Length: 216
Image 1 (cartoon, rainbow, N blue to C red):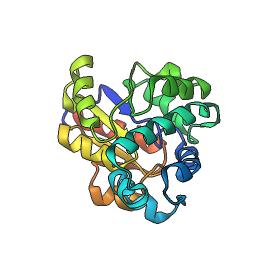
Image 2 (image 1 turned 90 degrees about the vertical axis):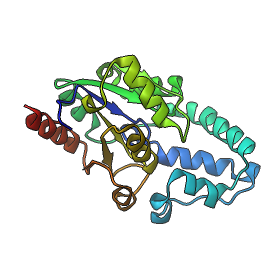
Image 3 (image 1 turned 180 degrees about the vertical axis):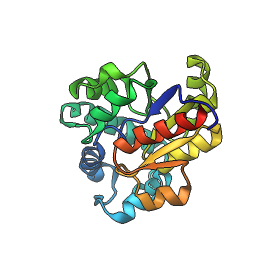
Image 4 (image 1 turned 90 degrees about the horizontal axis):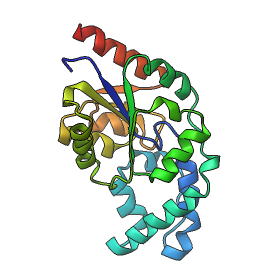
């Protein structure tokens, strides 16, 4: 990046919110209905992209997958009160909000996203919220965000936890910080190739400071 960071755009689930285990539990509740084996959290799961996970563990047709995803979202929306942010997230956002604008781009629903932010007392840090992104088309939503918010690609940075976040940012040529505490393992993220990596939330602050100092 050659310019200062004007805005940091966050993914929600797995990046700010520790929702993986709740989502996995709901997926296992639906296993008998959709006729797939219960899923265990393991290094193998964490190394897979979301597309690879769907093919290897669910293997649902397109229509059934749509219904499955809708049902997952509906049930998870009833459990948003149980979703907590990762340790260190609030302090990171507090410091980051003094440097630049902060927003969210997530595949989760507006209702769910707002509930998680408000329940954890961090909603005040965000200047914009883009929700309901398609599972495999986040890059298109990212392009729309840039146009709507009037940012150039080298004025923003995305923060996400999955291989598909990195892939989307590569398509749009937006730099990304990959966090290693979310859905995908550090190994999988590094193999995909993010611009930066965060191992604890405060690493995000350090990365933004480094970029802005170089841009001076």
